[in-house]
Image (cartoon, rainbow, N blue to C red; front, side, top):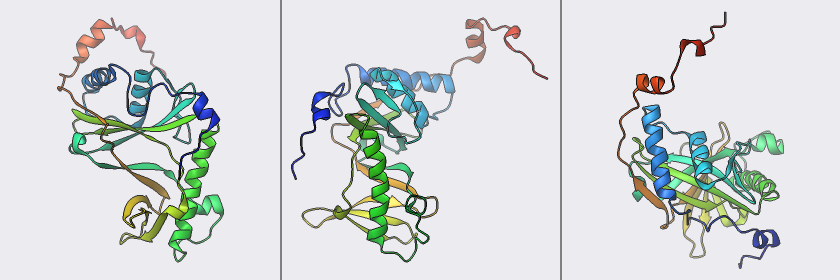
Length: 247
């Protein structure tokens, strides 16, 4: 089906085309990662860290939200940000993105999960996601997800964006796996079934599986030496008077 034109989308252009990051984005990201490693001393970079870094790199506002789809805002464009680990980020083809908790018990008042038709349950899970996306799209003309695929040592990363989409329930087939989690499969025109969603009944965690586009950005950095704590404090001209002991 041809994608329809939408007035608000046509009127407000995003700051750059999807996955065509601004000039010097790669170098600036590498600089941020080097600083992060040197300052923290460990390769730990979590979701909020990535949100703040990405917002700074594209000149957007970082304003964490409960929904998680519009934590980064630039005019009429909003991003949700995700991080995932991979042994070799530059070669990763698919990633699993934890995308919130979709509870039919809370949203629909269902009293039972087991024993119900999996396609009906999967439809409800998607409708919760769709309602969330629709609510954000009322505020923004463009909504994206930006993903950082990172190695364990944070020396290699890949970055890509995807449109934050609505999903038509009739395009997916659902079934329970051996771990008693619900899996949704995209049924393509050639009848091929591709694993797209996983939903866990305990905790209601909803996961979307995304293809990494060929135009993703990948880079590798050199490991920096950790900052000398004593020298940093000296550079700041730290004085004991900065510390107030509260008894």
